[in-house]
Each structure stands twice: as C-alpha cells, then as structure tokens.
Length: 298
Image 1 (cartoon, rainbow, N blue to C red):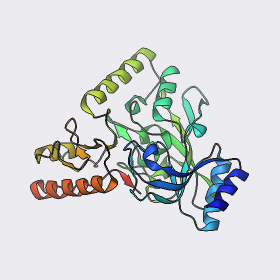
Image 2 (image 1 turned 60 degrees about the vertical axis):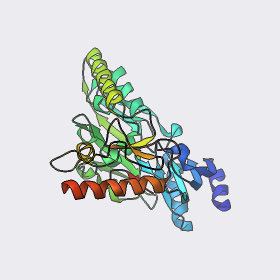
Image 3 (image 1 turned 90 degrees about the vertical axis):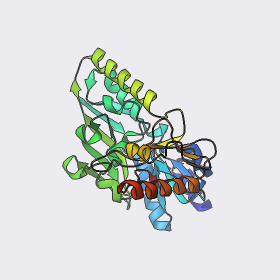
C-alpha cells in the first residue's frame, strides 16, 4: 500500500489512507478502506485500475454511497471515489446533457431545470450520483433513468475505455449491464425535452414535498432497502407483518416508511444484516413473499 500511495502521488491523484467508509455512505456505516483515491479525470481512473490489476489489489467504485452497506471490517483494497473532482455537467445541444459520473443527481436535475429541460424531475431528491443511478437504473414516481439515458462511457476492469449505447445497457428493474461488472462509469449522456420552467419547478417541489413527508430523509439509510416484489410492495408487506419500528440494536425499520431500514445512532453493518434477515424471514413466513435486498453490500 505504501507503493500504491507513491504511485498515486506520481500521477497527481488525491488520496486518503485508512479512511472510514462511514464518512462516505448515507447509511453512516462501514469500517476503513486501505486507500481512498479521488481521481479528477478519466486518465487517472484508467491508470489506477491498471495498477490494481498489475499488483493484484481489489478495487471498488464509489459515488455518494447512497445505496451501499459496507462491512464493519472495512474494505481491503482501493476505493475509487468519484466525488466533487469528477462532477462536471454541460449542455452539448438544446436538449442533451453530458455529465461526469460523479455529478450528484440533484446537481444534474437543477441544471436541467435551469435550462428549461423536462423529463428528469422524478430524480429530484434521490441522494446519489448520476453514475450510480445509471448503474442500478434508479427510479421513483413512475420515472426511471433508462427513459432519459442515451449512452454511458466507462472504463472496464482492465483499465480500457468503452461506451454502451442505450440498447446495450440492458436496463431492467434496478438493473443494468453494469450490475455484474466491475466497470467504472465515467460519463453519462442524457436526452430531455424542452418544457415550461415554472411547471418543471412546480413538479420538482411537489415530489420533494412528497419525499420529505413520506420518507425518513432526516435519518441515515441506504434508501429503499428492498426491491418491489411482483404483485405487492415491500413496505406494505413489512407493515402488514407488524414490523414498523422493529429493531436490532441501532438498526430499525423506519416508523415513517417501512421500506427503509434506518440507522438510529451507531448501527453496525452486522446489526443491519441481522435485521434484514429477520424481516425477510418473517415476511416470507406470514405472506409467502420473498423479499430481495436492493442495497449493494461490500
């Protein structure tokens, strides 16, 4: 790791050693990673991935950590963090936006609104990056990222550059072609439509109000914990089973929205996993539904 640190210095990439992952996830949970590297361009990302492959070091891609649960023991490898240094957003024609994968969805949504572009309002309030949204086909309020994406640029596990068109992205429910690949999405191209700026703002405000009143946005979580099962809703099933407020240590089923597991103080990854396992068991025994976790785990 000392040699890797020296390498990062040589390519002029910012990094931190033994960084607590709890500082980089919306769950506020997770042990330390060996090195957290914050590249500011695609070349640095490619060089880092190639170095990891050459030295047989595992690497993980991190945006805002909004759909992530990290082990209490931390991450034995390099975390490539696409943050504020990798978050540019630009308009390349009247209705097309190109943004770095590390750009927060909130920033991209607001940029679209400022330019009078509609079609992305559904993502206003989703606490992730545009790269993370593309990775999992994020969606809410009858909208999904797949409906507005044109293409994604990426760097693969060998450090080589590539692009997937919309058709190649293989979007599904909380799924994309990237779901089972250790690729780093670098840029996302989005196509929107011209709209009335007042109407766009009104819709954004309405959706944000709905989020704040119905979801536990004031508490650390990883968003919706479970995927929507066919024929029902995870939150309704969990509530039906009397699990509202059910807890293991500081991990608790939100009493505001049963689809969220929240961190009430100092919850550990182990507590969250134990709670998730108990929820799945009880829901299956009482309703016959098998809940599938939506949160990515490291």
